[in-house]
Length: 118
Image (cartoon, rainbow, N blue to C red; front, side):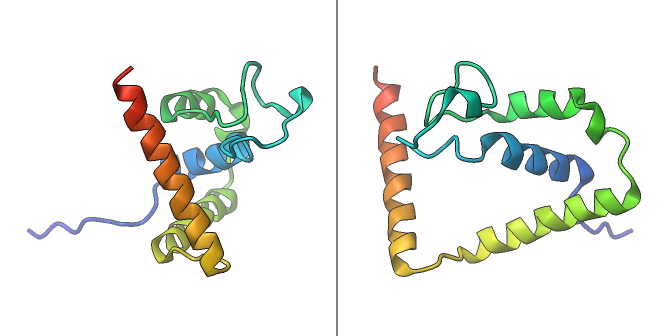
């Protein structure tokens, strides 16, 4: 027998991707102007974002995501697939956008490495 590994997005991954975009939008931008009323969770500061375990708990406890129609499930999977394709190609509006993305990544890596030795 030959087993073929499927690369198609699963429903669980699609739900997590959807919820991640919903709760983390605008939260991971350092020094972004945030109003307390716009914070999805109390105690969130600019630059904070929810980790995977917290998002998985949200998906498991969010009743609206439990009974979805087949069309809605397929739409969520298609959104995830489109996001994966954009991420794989690294599409940026300009070279400046790519440079800023690289700079932000390096700053984040520097902060995380610096926090290892505190």
